[in-house]
Amino acid sequence: MAFSGRVPLLLLLGLLPVVLRPARGTVWLWLLAVVVLILIDWALAPRPGGLSLTRRPLETVRLGQPTETVLVAANESGRPMRPQVRDAWQPTAGASGNRHRVRLGPGDRTLLRTPLLPRRRGDLRAFGVTVRSPGPLGLAARQATRIVPGTVRALPPFDSRKHLPSRLARLRELDGRSAVRVRGQGTEFDSLREYVRGDDVRSIDWRATARSAGVVVRTWQPERDRRVVLVLDTSRVSAGRVDDVPRLDSAMDAALLLAALAARAGDRVDFLAGDRRVRSRLRATGGRDVARNLQESMADLEPVIAEANWSALAGAVTGLGRRHALVVLLTPLEPSAVEEGLLPVLPTLTRHHRVVLASVRDPALDRLATSRDDLAQVYDAAAAEQVLHRRRRTAELLHALGVHVVDTDAERLPPALADHYLDLKARGLL
Image (cartoon, rainbow, N blue to C red; front, side, top):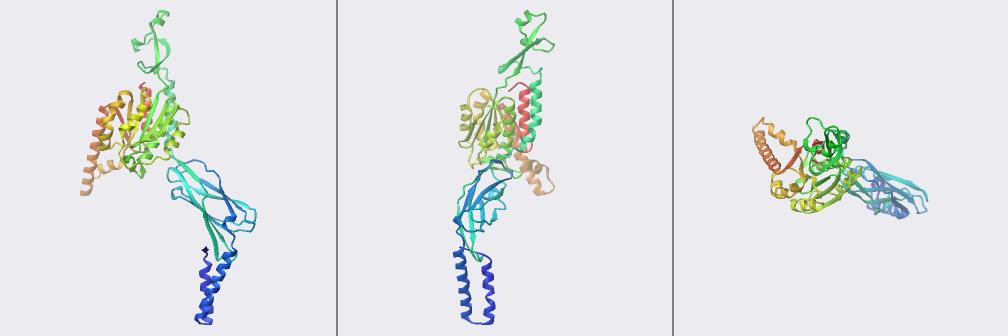
């Protein structure tokens, strides 16, 4: 049973008879009359079970993209109803305007629309639908909550998509160059042409030269069917926030841009995510749906407050195949975590693959290191300089092992990683 705001007003109205006839019996008589009216109103209220509720399927959306859920309400009680319906969702679903007042005659149907604005990745679920059916006097209502299943899946937003057209233009430029010719392992024969000054004499095709009037050389182009393996760190270091955005989400954005670009270049993209163990694994063969599939795989990933087991992750990379690949480790450049966990397994990876470490850099460190207006800021600057020095030292260790480091802020990391990939393509190293 639920009471409306009319009940206290009705009780206050009892002051009038009490003033006209002040007596204890008058008070009790008025209270009894109010209780009787409430019970009668409650008894005459239509049962909430007479309202049938079904939910239409929800579409998958990107994080921060508005959507709506639709309830189909039908009056099956045979009596007129004017219920209040509350469609409750978990807070991160961003439900607004979820209280609906409905007037339905017998057999009538209506649609109840609740706007949603997801604020967290993954599956966001409805808690339940509460139906409050008031009586004819509006004093009391029958109330019931039932489960009407509903789930909206929020994918990573892929904000870096805006950088894709410019990188695709550069990729087309690379593919269209007739002069991109590289000799060595992992290249494909392209065509024959006449020798010009500056060509590598090792590329001369002596058989073709013997059949022609001039010297003929072979031209080569990088293989298109290459492998790109994205390894996303979901350990404790990925839980840190930079400009109020988790490092994990920023790394996802960079991975999505690189995957979309590599797929357009004809490369195969594999994906791994893990910490103490592998949390997600996706094997793809390329195509325009790679980014979409990656978003689905990333949607439920959350940081785990534990150290990453890089031996297990490196083993998972090896399990994908020993064929040469570009392995991109999306993990923060945290000196202690890298030196203790990642460095020991890097020789295994660099022996077979080209390895890149992509890290989200906190711009607050640079701001602290340059602000020295008072004594407190001087101490902060000294601490920031120490952290930056350790990061530089760790980056130098990685370079010595043959690992290229892309360390920049969250906004610039996706295009910087994509540019590094394109640079490898242009130099015939991928």
